[in-house]
Image 1 (tube, one colour):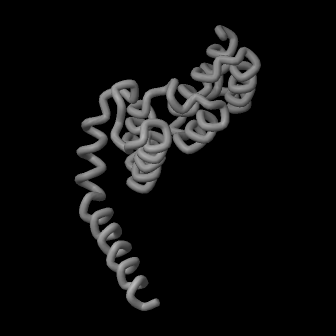
Image 2 (cartoon, rainbow, N blue to C red; image 1 turned 180 degrees about the vertical axis):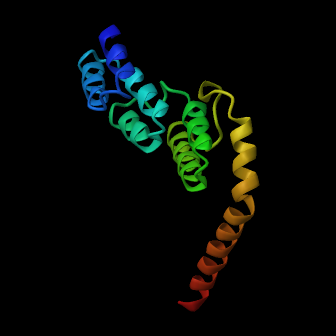
Length: 138
């Protein structure tokens, strides 16, 4: 693990060291460390995919992913990550609410609501009215 960290420190001078470090961490089976490295590089989607494919969705708190997505300043990325965890929570716990093991997600919920509450409400209302209209048109 120490050598992998040294390789990561060499990335500014030797960019291929990044992939060598990731490969080394994977061989050492330190999968959580790979997620952390990906998040440090702001590769949130890649980290989510890696987490899901290695069944790590609950080992790294949602707040870590949401914080990284928020720091990128990309509203679409934040929206996608937030929705991913709501879907995951619904599948695992039967409801979309964040759980205590997800870390403190209150600020992310507030941020999400400030950005998208009116939009998602309008989309939901629009889809509800169009589905009710489709019932009558049959």
